[in-house]
Amino acid sequence: MAGQASKSSAIPGWYADGLEHIWLPYAQMKTVPPPLPVVRTYGARIMLADGRELIDGIASWWTACHGYNHSHIRQAVEAQLARVPHVMFGGLVHEQALTLARRLASLLPGDLRRVFFSDSGSVAVEVAMKMAVQYWINTGKPKKTKFVAFKHSYHGDTQGAMSVTDPAIGIHDVFREAYPHHTIIDIGREPEPDLTSLARFLERQAGEYAGIIVEPLVQGAGGMIFRSEKLLRSLRQLADGADQILIFDEIFTGFGRTGTLFAYEQAGTSPDVITLSKALTGGTLPLAATVATRKVFDAFWSDDPKTALMHGPTYMANALACAAANASLDLFEREPRMRQVADISIALERGLAPCRDLPRVKEVRVKGAIGAVELDRIDDLDRLRARFVEQGVFVRPIGNIIYLTPAFTISSDELTTLTGTIVKTVRELKQ
Ligand SMILES: Cc1ncc(COP(=O)(O)O)c(C=O)c1O
Image (tube, rainbow, N blue to C red; front, side, top):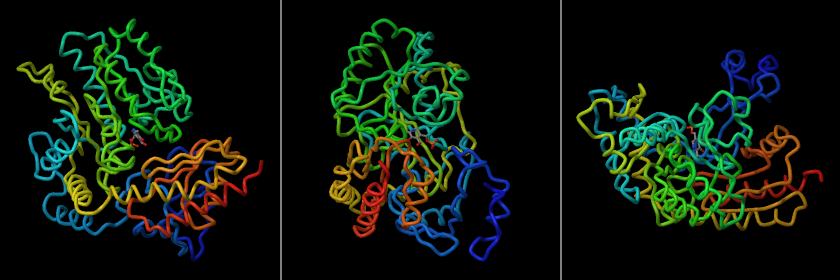
């Protein structure tokens, strides 16, 4: 791929020269199509080096919820850059991190009170898993080290996060023998999942298991699969009955995506630990948080240094990222984000509905600002992605799913273009 890049007036020098040295994500480097050089972003738009402008349907892996380059976030980051860009978090703290911790604790329903910052969603999941395992070590049950996760789950690419991701979604299959084996339970695709086998399993094995990890309401990277609120309530009951730490991974669903600020609000229950990232900074800087209840935190609170949580990423609580996150929370307070999500939901439902009549379509589903068209198969993912770009939109299907997760600030015309292009493109697909 890199060797194919040629210099022309539309291709900037940095692109052709640098491509030889870059290793791209989730990509067979020999065959991956050349990535698109981006020179500017604004609102829901991505501008390419050759002058083309794409309407973004993905919001940069679900992060840019306020659109790109929101002036309020930019000003907050610029002001912070002049004051304190970063200080180590060992022995030092700063206003942005403590303010953000307080704000997150007050926004999260339930008793989630203690915020541990890190720099990516995967690491937030690692921290959640370490909290769960050490909770049991600190409370005298050191054999409880394993986790239950679910078919179609995705929790990240680091070792622990991979080990609770369903290997069948195909991302980490190659590493199957190289990481610890946890238990991936299949609860089917019915709206009301049958948890009897999980209940029986926990009756027998709870003594070896530290916790249950689940993506509330929507399994994202595993195929935009929607789950019921009841599942979360049932898992809460099971976790309580079988001494399990219940982890909600809201890295995708958090900050409005499903129609409420956090997806689990819709279930009227709460976890012991939650993980947050992606839209936390409005898509500007990397930051993640693992938030624990008082019950979990109290198990680490003692005079014995051995019961402390031994984790501390160099860039944890980065001040620029925390400033961006505080500014992003301001926007949720000041601007009508939840109303925008509700409007997007209606527009996605209306705009994608014609897909239901197309032969290759198995299902069209919409929740909050997520719209998914499930096809029977996608024969050539790269070709399909390129076809969207040719039509001026950035849409990146995964597996057999074409989906939209736009910025909440996207205009109704832009959204109509996105849904219309999907309908047209699905209509073009061969039987
Ligand atoms: C639910 C969920 N958990 C964890 C992650 C991993 O986050 P990151 O890519 O920031 O490591 C993702 C990323 O897509 C995710 O969707």
